[in-house]
Amino acid sequence: MMHRFIPVRRLFSETKCSLPCQLRRRCFSQVARNEIDNRDGLVRKMPPFDYSPPPYTGPSADQILSKRKEYLSPSMFYFYTKPLNIVEGRMQYLFDDKGRRYLDAFGGIATVCCGHCHPDVVEAIVNQTKRLQHSTVLYLNHAIADFAEALANKLPGNLKVVFFTNSGTEANELAMMISRLYTGCHDIISLRNAYHGNAAATMGATAQSNWKFNVLQSGVHHALNPDPYRGVFGSDGEKYAKDVQDLIQFGTSGNVAGFISEAIQGVGGIIELAPGYLPAVYSTIKKAGGLCIADEVQAGFARTGSHFWGFENHGVVPDIVTMAKGIGNGIPLGAVVTTPEIAEVLTRRSYFNTFGGNPVCTSGGLAVLKVIEKEKFQENAFVVGTYLKERLTALKNKYDLIGDVRGRGLMLGVELVTDQKLKTPAKLETIHVMDQMKELGVLVGKGGFYGNVFRITPPLCFTKEDADFLVDAMDYTMEKM
Image (cartoon, rainbow, N blue to C red):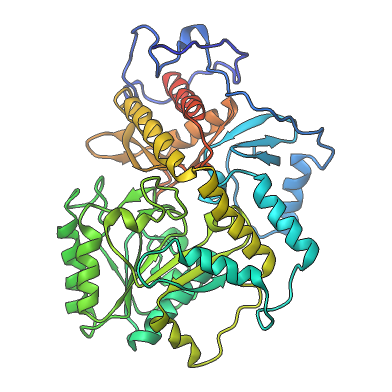
């Protein structure tokens, strides 16, 4: 059945693009369900939403940008030629200072899982703030204990001791330290193209030069990335896994502290590890006396749809799980979960985190778990994510510019290339498409080492109608190139 397309005002002017014509395949057939008739300027209307923000009376985008340049770190960058001034958010939508609505397909970098300002999460945070904003974990409070219990119940095996942090970087730092303390070894194996944080140890585990400063980073070995699209062994996970064995034999004493990886690399460009890789590597690491750390900062909390945690898609059970981002729907919250035996190592000295596990954040985190369950967001991520991936794959078959569509659930990547055979990264084209989609009202992220991968990680309340609007906006933009 064909969708009815509604004519709307053109959202950006007709300008000639200098991009080479061979980047797309021409299609002059009648309008199909995944196409927009660009000749008549028809654009699918954004799905209706029953909210309009009040008039914005704050400083302009130019004023904010001026203050950022004067008072904030010059390392802070922003998306788009003309940066957005976002002033409100509701569920899967964001609003700028002019009251214009945008479909948020980036979710604050895979962070907003329940939707912007979800009323249940907001209510939990506000109510706790009114009662007790902060004291210390040196006193008793039910909020931290309730959330720890609920979180432990979502994990397999004996993973039931929780340490709360404020971010994913903190969580991964703590997990790496725990593995070194428990094993008595220093060497940790990570993957090339990985991102695990930007502090001392995690920067060592991170393996992209554009995220690494020239400071001391010791004891981390980076294995071949089991990347089915660009990797040397394609989708053969066991061949990649042999490199980990080689690293242990020829780069360490024969024993290691641990292995850390994401199930789907987020910053690295939404790369799902090759099938069979994690089971083989986990076995190798165990034989070398190490612990297996699953970084679930981006893939966790139902985002992949088929499972609550990304590592579950690979049939493995780690020794330590780290998490952040979706755990709090946007509040500063992270966690490390491990077994009682492993957790004991932190009693050798005093370990303390002033804000980790504070009552406001843990109340918000518990509300997030309840919302995911109540509103069946894991099921929605699977159903809508599968539909969205199918539509994006159909788009790949239409345009040579799209080299790969990958990921699971609502953690999807679209890699753009200028040459299908050579897989030459389409850096400028990615920026162009991203900018034009913003003009049409769709916000996506980008990542990958070359900056040529669209990162699609929307709130888990994303609908099929939202998916249609996103794909049609991408289709419309590419058809005009």
